[in-house]
Image 1 (cartoon, helix red, strand yellow):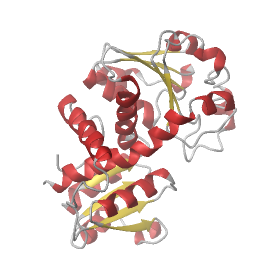
Image 2 (tube, rainbow, N blue to C red):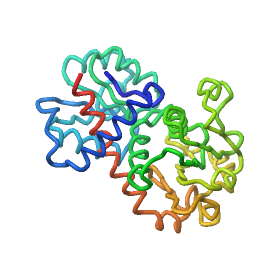
Image 3 (cartoon, rainbow, N blue to C red):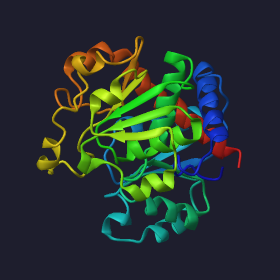
Length: 298
């Protein structure tokens, strides 16, 4: 694995390896070695962040490296320099790059032009680091995702749901995505996905019935905040106590944060499942360290 750009580009063996590595690194924190010693990694963020920035900066430092944070306003990308030119410059100076931006193609182009390990820390198409953290959390809380039913309630074609659908295809667990009809993945994507264990519905109750994992995210992704008419379509899709009454005994609730209480998740449910949700947030650190260690081998 030369880069970490999407869940789509991985396979079951690679996903399982990264999660096992993350679990090991979590147990060995402080004693995990320093494979990035002497290396500088650029964190190029054109989208704001709390968990992603902190977890990558801490992870790179704990592995012996030096993180260099570059916001879109700090570098010439903010003035229109092509991503391929930025990549060619940084590829001669730093040892790796972590990119949080809008277009997936920008991350792909950077990886192709820089010749240094590149990590997708979030794009509009995928959020692959978060999915690894989520799967690690499921493994810790439920023992395995094998044979489990995962329900995703919310935007059916967000970066989170795209990554979840690819993960389900490769790992084989049942995934049901419940979203308004206008927010569901197009038929071309589902044809490309070609996963019989992934289904889409407009009925959040049907999706949640018997589910072991109930996952949600903000209704409006970063950059969509002004689309209030879209938010109205999500009436009835809140993860609340009534919805969870249909879930399997011992179920867990996940939210990648930040959460808007009273919208996609009720205050009551978030606080009831806060231990799991913030364990999930912590696991971003360990999952991303596993990615960094794997790329450091190359």
